[in-house]
Image 1 (cartoon, rainbow, N blue to C red):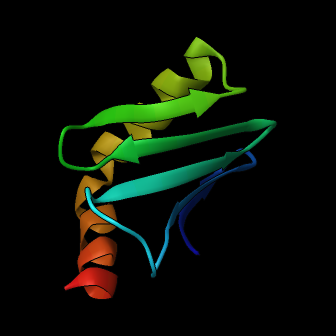
Image 2 (cartoon, helix red, strand yellow; image 1 turned 120 degrees about the horizontal axis):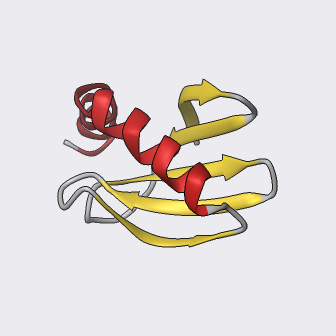
Length: 76
């Protein structure tokens, strides 16, 4: 998995060998999550506070083009 974005101990990654729908894996500070890059919502999460999830989602929304470009690079 390649880290695309890293902040405050949290890594947002795209896996080169993954399945649809396009999604990112988020890990760090005791939490894990997957975020659907098409519907712009969490698929699943654990270990993150609501505040953490809000921050993560805000960053993903600001950098969605970067994450989708990385997904396409591996999967198209």
